[in-house]
Image 1 (cartoon, rainbow, N blue to C red):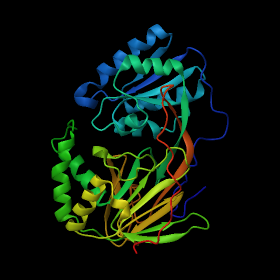
Image 2: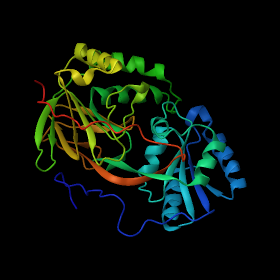
Image 3: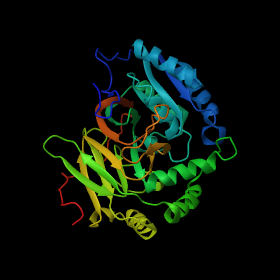
Length: 353
């Protein structure tokens, strides 16, 4: 199918049965050697060593080309137990954008490790090897923003500007440097006083529940996780077939920092200038240029309406469409894992008073 903006719609895994993992078999290990200040390769090697006594063979992929080949092989081979992302959230994002049909899991080595934390997957290779041997998987929704899949969230506006600035600082020398939480302080302050906060129109396209909201910063959350453990969408669920939409209305540095403080306190959803609802599909447009981040990485721009769009820059469009792909992914978790208690039904409130 084709989206209204002319781009092909990703409708999740293609037709046909998903291969079932067989006893024993092999595990694909997709590693970012530079993740976690260079510990990614060492952790991958430790995991492969820990799998061997459990009767599981490991096949590594160290480059993007190797990753694509490994995912294709895993999807065609029922003896593949799972694919492991060894790294941070960027490594997980790269893996899910290969559209794997085999289950995935995570050995965390990055900075925030939001996906791994949500599924209570830690940095112990031996423990993860036992989790893989046990073989429990859970279905998980995936978000889709203009053709790019996300597991955590997509952010438009002030948030996208902060992430873009942070990424620029990390890559200023031409080499991607390891990051840390304190590295976000400078981008937050700079964005607060230099970002122009253009208005963003958010059109909810769910049949029977259509509406248009206007704000200056917009989030679509799939999982209830954000950097620094900030509780932007504490009720988001990984398997409800919905995205949690949060729209911050008011522009300017005072409101940006005030909203951030209320998020820290966990009281932002009570504000008249913050709107929260759940949706399956939204589209976004603006009269200004709006930075976009997906799963914590810069991912292009929302351009002013009726802009001349460069076909060679698919991540810069004058309309962005964000939707959910229900249960498009399987994640391998510890047998004892359970999701947070499902939140009470969302009570709709009139947008912005």
